[in-house]
Structures are given as C-alpha cells and as structure tokens.
Length: 214
Length: 342
Image 1 (spheres, each protein chain N blue to C red):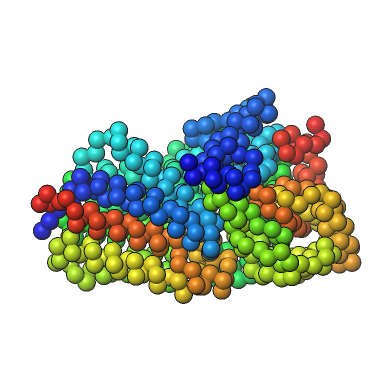
Image 2 (tube, each protein chain N blue to C red; image 1 turned 90 degrees about the vertical axis):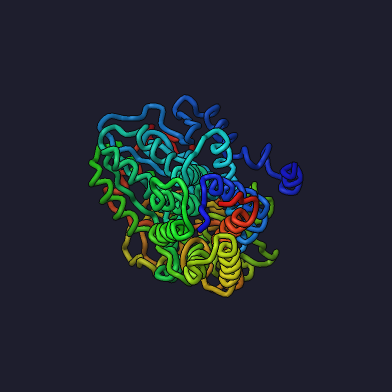
C-alpha cells in the first residue's frame, strides 16, 4: 500500500492554499448569498499564514504538520471556520500522533476524527447545510473502497465531495449564520461545504501527481 | 492591485481593504492612547490601568464593523478589554486568551459573548485555554434578537442591541467589586430581561467583499436584520417611520412579554448610516407606543452604538429595569463612546 508522507502532507496543504486562494471569489460569493461574505477572505488569510509558517519550519512527521496547520488556522481564520478547520486539523494531528507517514487507512481514519471534531464543536448533523454535508458523504464514499490505492481513491473521494457540496443547494440551513435566513437559505450552495470539497480536491491532486513511489 | 479597483467602486474612507482594522486601531491609539492600550500581536484593546486588583475583568469581542462596539466601550465603568476580529468575523481564541490574562486582577474574568456560531466557538476555546491556566472564567451570552423566530431550528437568537446595555451594566457592577459569581448571575438576568428588533433601509459593503452584502430595491426595507449585513427574514415595502417603528415594537412587546406597569430602558440604535434626526423620530413613536402599552420608560439611550458599517436603519431594544439596574446604569462610565457621571 502506498504511504502518505510528510512531503505529501505538505504538498496537500500547499495545493489547498492555492485552490482556496484561486476560488476565494466564489467562496465569498456563496457566503454573501447566505452568510456574511467573508469565507473566501478568511480562509485565504488563514492558509497564507500557514504557508508562511511552513516556509520557515522544518516538519518531519505528518502529525506535527497537521498540528501546525491546526494551530495556525485557529489563530488566524476567525469566524466559525477558524475553530472548525483548526479543530479538524488538530484532531487529525491527535489521530496520527507519533506517526511519520500514514497508510491509506490511517489517513482516512484521521480525516474521520477531523470530521468528528467538527461535528462536536459545531453541533451539526447531516442535512444541516454545513461542512459536514460535504465531509461525511465523501468519507463514506472512501470507506466503501477500503483497499483501493490512494491515487484512484482520492479522485473518487474528491468527486463525491464535489457532488455532496452541490447537494447542499436545496438544503434548508439549520446551523450557522445561514440558518437565520430560514427558507431563503434554500437554493444556495453552502460555502463551508464548498471549501471542504476544495480541500479534498487538493488531496486528490497531490496523490495523483509527482509521487515518487509513495 | 485589484483592491484599487474595489476602492474606486466602494467609495470608503479606507487606504486598503486588508488594513482597515489595523489602521482603525492605530487611530484609536492616537486618539485615546491616554487611557487605552492597544496590543497588536495578538490584537486587543485594554484599559491602560488594567489589571485592576480585586476587580472582575470584563472582556468582550467580536467582528469589527460594529463600532463603537466593542473597542469604544473599553474604560472605567465598562469593559477591561475588547478583541476586534476582521470585519464581521469573530476574533480568534489567542486574542481572547491574551486579553483576558492581561486584565486579570485575580477576581476572575467574564466574557460577554454575542450569540453567533463563530463568536461562541472561539470564546469557548479561549475559556478552555484560560481554565487550563487556572484562571476562573464565566461567559455571559446575549441573544436578544426577536427577529430569529424559531430558535430551535437555527443557531439561536442573535446578540444585538442588548450587548451594549450588558457591557455598561456589568461594567458598573464589576467596578463595585462584585464577585465573579454575582456578575455571572446579573448577566444571566439581563440576558433574559431584554429583547431587540432591527431593520435596514440599505445594505452595507464589507471592505474586502467590495460590494453590498445584499441587494435591497429602492422601495423596499429589510425587517429583522442582524448586524452583519446578513439579510433579515422579511422584506417589505418602504413605509413611514411611525409604521416601521410599530413593526419593530410589536414583536418585542409580545415576546417577553413587557406588561403594563413595567419599568424599561428604551434603546433606539442607529445602524451606522442613519442620522440622529431620524432616530429621534423613531424614539418619539416608540415612546408613545410604550406609553400606550402602560410601560414606564425610566432610562433611555438614543444613538448609533452597535452598527453594521454604513448600513442605514435602526434597532430598538427594551430591557426590564429595577432600582438596582437603574443605579448601575447611572454609575460613572468613562470610555471613548459612552461617558457620563465622571
């Protein structure tokens, strides 16, 4: 089985930062429709801070890298996304504690722990029109193909994530600022679910390019 | 530089969208540096004379764009520290943690938190961090917005106008060296005794978004607006000040309810882009409605104290009052935005 190395983890974060920055306008537009229009700017600011820190820090294991990402997002993103994404990566760090590299099951398990932290902190259930509605179905899709290699598996998961994000459009928001809109939240894609899909798209890109034999 | 294009479109007195909060703080330092200390990393505003030994430290915070809340309420008789986030974005736990430590006079810390998902989660994290260091922390929530109708199926009611009154009243109580537990109790009482409702005549533009948060046709108004440019719940045709005031007062009066003979504080707030002349026209009608309802308005506040950038509009807050609360309201306060009795 292929391994997910610290270098891969680093590339994942780099690619996520690039993708989020590239789509910041879209995220802001989605958030303007049903939130307060700051999701794109907040995520970009947070991931820029992460990139800056990574540029000057030597990280030799995935757990330490996830911890650095989590702590930095926690103190730079703000809003609800700060504690949720920060907590997500800190939970991934805890789940991979002491591990330098991860096999596919360990990576999936750490993502599951991340999702559990988001659910605990945000008290969101599936169907509430939140990040959970992207992550939960995407990880479920991965669980259905436990023995598939990282490269095809992450592509499958990224596709499931993108579909799941689109599936938030008809949902009625029950958590977060969009919930204040009531029925008017219907018909818009959830910005948090969208940034989650970008995160998993970045994972797929990295697992499918320049991997020198895991 | 795409920002330059935005500035041209936005017509705001800013230099660059990403420097708005920092440059505001530098301005506050220049103006009020005699009594406020601005910490830049992490960002918070604190009383220059903090920590005050034996006094409970009051810390609040929230997204920027609501000025003078919260930074304008730091000073004797009100907050010990305020943590500004980016515009309309909750500040981060490290800010709240450092601010709380900086103003901890040994009697504990009270966090005044508006009920928004982000604010609550970030303050919760800060509280956990402080408790790890052995600092006693209590949180007091404000969730006074009656516009959020079904709080069971939302993130709950939003904290709006009552927050200003909460900061003044708890600030006065803390100044009297009332204990942490007593301040928490008083805060919870105030939370359950006040209700608000707001409306917008126009939208507002978050600097880094560069365009209005929502589109409002010329002849329509948004009822039940929050303070973040998030759309309200009902969009109705433009009406007279008296009609709009009636539509704001009705859901407030029936919610708690406020009954004949009750003493209240009436707070008519401007959203940032509404002149005082209009706020008094609203107050005039709101006072008449209160009187017809048999309420005794024993204290009031009229002006733009919790805003939503340049949004035009108003909110009304009613708070049940008693002798103790009146005494706390009248107590000296010396902050950039509220000052009396000194």
